[in-house]
Image (cartoon, rainbow, N blue to C red):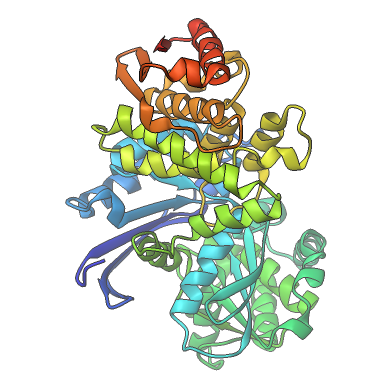
Amino acid sequence: MQNGTPLAAIDLGSNSFRLEIGRYHSGHIERIEYLKETVRQGSGLDENKVLNQAAMQRGWDCLARFAERLHGFKKHQVRAVATQTLREARNRDEFLRKAQSILGFQIEVISGHEEARLIYQGVSRLLPQSDERRLVVDIGGRSTEMILGHGYESREMESYRLGSVAWTGRYFAKGQISATAFRTAEVAAKAEIDQALDVFPPSEWSLAYGSSGTVSSVADILSANGWASGVVTRSGLDWLVERMIKAGHVDQLRVEGLKDERRPVLCGGVSVLRAIFDLFGIEQMIPTQGALRHGALYDLIDRETDGTDVRERTVRWLGERFSIDGGQADRVSRVATALFAQIAADDPLAGRYSQKLAWAAHLHEIGTHISHDRSYHHGAYILDNVDAPGFSLAELHRMSQLVLGQRGKLKKMEDALTDELFAKQLMSLRLAVLLCHARQMPEYELLKLGYKPGTFRLSTAPGWAKRFPQSAWLLGEEVQAWQKTPWKLQADIR
């Protein structure tokens, strides 16, 4: 990546949408601009996990303003990530289709583990280098992430379904504040994160850091009211809770440093924070400048630097974890991407989709770890449910569909095959799996795969069928498999 390259990250949080713009310089990012809008999408989820129209419109309006600022940015210079609200929303695809059209860039809905990884990456990059063992806590609108890390490495990560928006709506309805409400909210929070003590035992970390909205807001309030600057203490937190209970209603709360945008969700966030203090025996927590959006920016650098894309490491790790045959994975990947290059070279997205095809090919036998019978079904399930650092939920699902469709009848792929690029990926993968059936590198250079709208055509060199009769027979079966799909495969096998 060249010095001076502008980069941007967008965090579509449950309470706020944030846009961070920076400039790359020698491995670091210099801030150019930071925009934040309180959108409160999380409050728009009903009991059926459907995002209401008003909440979606607030999000679209905000992204339209962000889009104006991002005019001229290239796709590889922007990463937009969405978190818990859109993880939960059953109608998220409706929101995302319009949101991506307005923004002009892809929006990735990321898992809780991926959110935690990016948070720690952002926090660690903006802290001084140190050998300290850190606990990082990020209380968002509808989820709370906790990470145990050392240096730039996150060692343990978890995401819990509680946050300032969710807990405010559940335990402080209509802004009413009482000691009973706080006790109930804190007990419920502790029950939600009780197992975190096993994952993040206090003996494993020396300092606690707080990222993002709730912790920084509480720190600002305490500092404005005479408490030490740059830290949230247990005594200061207790003082704030007493002031809130005394006010009786959030609208009656009068404390210096409280911003109007934070007022409606303060009770829920503070109750979760105090529960964490009590559960872990924390005496003080240090607010940090780094957050999810900074981690997304540094991830953009990694993706553009050879050997540092975390997704490549994740694919290797998954292969080792599920004991795949590395030699066969490499063979299938090499053949699949070579075939894909013949039919997708002119597509501007070919490079990205070739990379994702290669990852799916490397993991195509991941399901055999469970059972060889229906292994592609097991593999698809694993990829749809595994915590895979670096990947969005959509990327994992596309890979799972490729793994599912690698063999067998194509009826199960009916919905996915409406996408031409996916059809090209799947055709390439199925042919590669077929050609590598003997678990040896086939002479794929003798094959030519062509494409015209709706039709694939595979041709072989003269004498190929005689030399490889089993492969020729399998190709004939493959031609038949595609007959009941919108795509046809013609084969000139000689």
